[in-house]
Length: 187
Image (cartoon, rainbow, N blue to C red; front, side):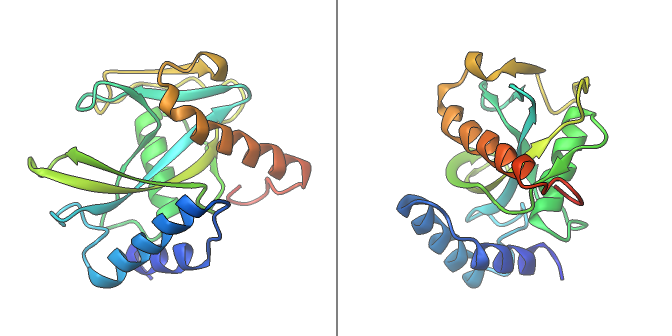
């Protein structure tokens, strides 16, 4: 299928909880329809990225992003080998955290478009699709070369307040899944 087709299918079926997210979903679908290369980092107009809010109980794993200089969720560019957006987010989270056994909710939880100068070396936009991910209990992260620092933060002490609404969405997703016995399989 490929990540582009998956992005169209997943975002075409997703029903966000608020109007702002619905508006972004429609914009993403228009961008995907207009650009066959919209999931490729070489797409200078912007490209779809996939990120993961990695949780372990009341803690969230954040990376100190070297280009942005802020604590952020894990994630990044889709690769040619990625077949799904959720798979890209899970791959990025595993690579950047060094943690095996992560589980992902394959339904997106949040969208955000942000300007960035990434590996292209020119200003572009990331059309980020965000997923909730859970780490095995007691998992110890290992910092990769893609991070200046990597650590678990108690949710109540997250150093970047802009992340709190997204983290709240991720924690509510996990609580809902655990209550309904949905943790089997990918989630």
